[in-house]
Image (cartoon, rainbow, N blue to C red):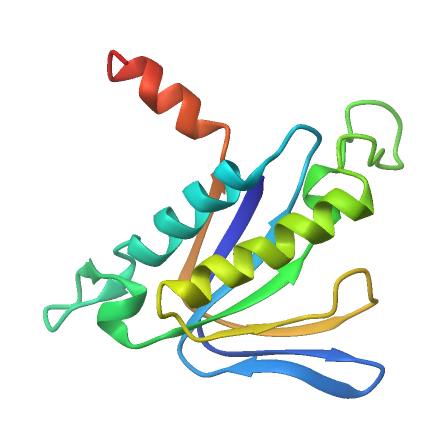
Length: 157
């Protein structure tokens, strides 16, 4: 799984002219799923994201997590994160998971974030959405759940 995380002052997602989710200060998560992803990938991302210290403290340093800052998540499914542009000019999306798996893991990610006490708003899986993002900073971080394997290997276990 891959997540593009943007610290925002506010954000919203609209489908067919109806706002389906909106937040004030917090994080927008653009979430993509690839083949072979499983719940452990979602668990890794949820834990990493909600504990990232990317909110400013009183001295203006990024030392506070989402919970410390009292922020919410706006989670938007984004299969295009797995767009492959190596050949030609039109992206190939064969690295994106089938919609059935992607939706299961998207829903699981949201449930896990809520279970950890985080306020969560969301888009509509598979819909054409308009996402308004007021990036604060700007702060944008990309996390790939494949990193969880690399970090274990480099840590000696």
